[in-house]
Image (tube, rainbow, N blue to C red; front, side, top):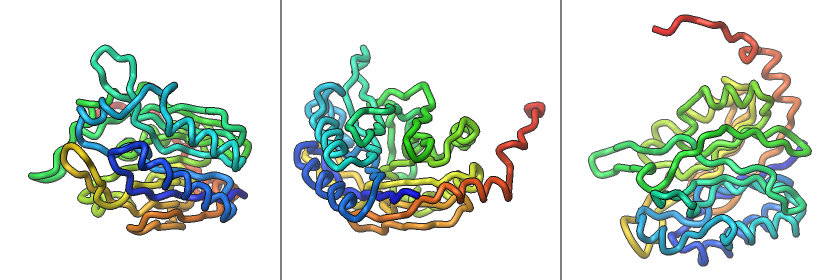
Length: 277
């Protein structure tokens, strides 16, 4: 059994001003007994301006948010999933990475995962996203080993691609992480349904910390996000809903529930080959 905390943030486009609140919430969650704390997608910077991102983002080795969060994980002796940090890369086209990190209680980076699926959609007449214009997609699924579970790492829009989660579960994942900065339009329509489906299909716990609200910005159009950080059981039950406030939600993870769900519905072992249409 481990207690997890889903941290819900309203990050601005300034990594420097975002960091103190993020650290404070992590500390509060650890004080409440959480041994595994999770933050949302783009914990360091929510911005729709590529120029602004280029001005404020850094390479991984220079990133102050990553340095501070690895240090606080070591100080508090907790497992920490940094949902993702927007980072510069050495790519010739100048695109950024949307990178999730799993940090051990000793402050070591155990695993890195670059978001595979880019959010290139028009959700309404006034709301269009072209994530691939600024971020380059990752190429590899990541299963991370902790001392309490195997964790399959994903980010936000990945949740619509069920095969990724099935393969992570079949590789041994018992917990799936889905840190997000979900659109309010698609959040209202699909967020809970998608997360519950991924849990039901895999018999995994699904932990999804989220960004929430209207995000302050100094450049570009302000972004809005759905919130409602969710923890879903391996049977598909919503255990925690973070609502629309900044803060954190606690949930106790009992991996015996993973075994129980999979023994009742052993669908992960029932794959069959079939001809494509």
